[in-house]
Image 1 (cartoon, rainbow, N blue to C red):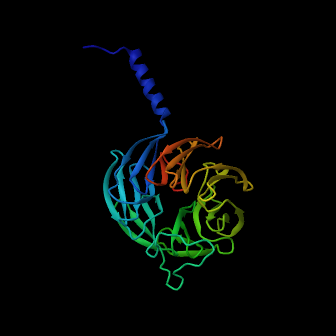
Image 2 (cartoon, rainbow, N blue to C red):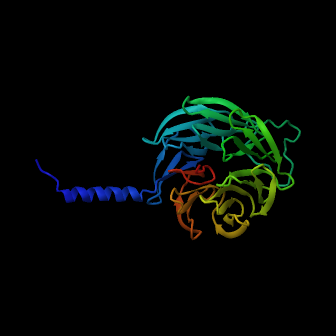
Image 3 (cartoon, rainbow, N blue to C red):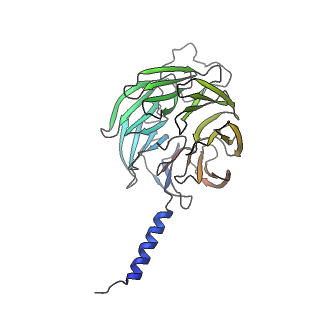
Length: 347
């Protein structure tokens, strides 16, 4: 029998530990004309794709333990559940018409569904063409992953978009584009607790995020070209002007900076949260809606649907460092291990 020298064993062990220490994780990108792309965060290259067995994935999320990836599939009115150990499709879960925004939280999937939505936003400054028709409230489908099925619907406003949770986990906060409201619901039963109108501050609330310290919320107003700041009782504190069509919004992990993706202005805007003064405008591409930090907070990955690419941005220098081609209209991006971002949050 040939024995391996202790020095060799020690060298292999050190190499293995060093390799693991350098592993930055992976990012997952939903592509509206494809499946899910996998980006290796060590190389910042696309290393593969996942067949979700559905069409037009938009919202995307990952479970706290990293076991499952979830996508919301517009054309199939369902969720795809993917086993991330094998990158294989597991099952579909029906949720309702036009599923879009996904948040995975405490073993549940919360997904906005829009039975009245045509999928086309109204023109800024103009009344909706269907103003004489009743606006059907959107639903937030609540899926129990352990049971593998939808367990209830929460009634939102027309065209519910963003979904967030209070720091205590007792409330769900959602933005409703079509009637310019933010609604607060009981986490356990979905009961409506409060409605905040954004009309006098700006129209079409979209992104919504709680500050890491839980003391306030920020919501982007797409047609208001601004974001509003609400205290933890949802009282308006201030309105901050942005570039045209802000959507995705996220704090950094420490809550010192706020990042806002302005789709039509083609920038990722960075703000100092001590006074909400702008730090920098980072030039981006077309229809850049959603982004995620890397798990080590060193980079930001921004999905730019109409530029067919994912941008890599140095989170300290605030500069674009790489363009990763994605030819199937990237919509959203999340990372694992869990990271801060427009579609996820580090609890």
